[in-house]
Amino acid sequence: MDESVLMDAFVRMFNRLYENRGALIKTLTDNIEKAIMKKASVKEIKALDKQIDKLKIELKGLVQF
Image (cartoon, rainbow, N blue to C red; front, top):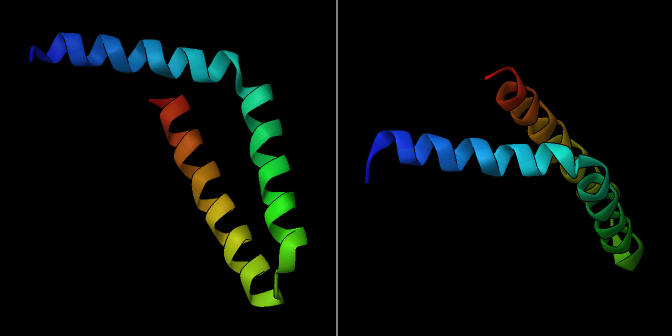
């Protein structure tokens, strides 16, 4: 596959995610809350917070890219 085709597909996908980031974040937050409410320990909550922080950093890197 041509590199420019892959880059174009990535840019289109990223733009769609960026345009719908409010809905995406809302869905993510709702799902996290549901998971936590089921039976989360302090350890699990800390692990989720750590993962969320990692994902935020990755998303910021993609935005800067």
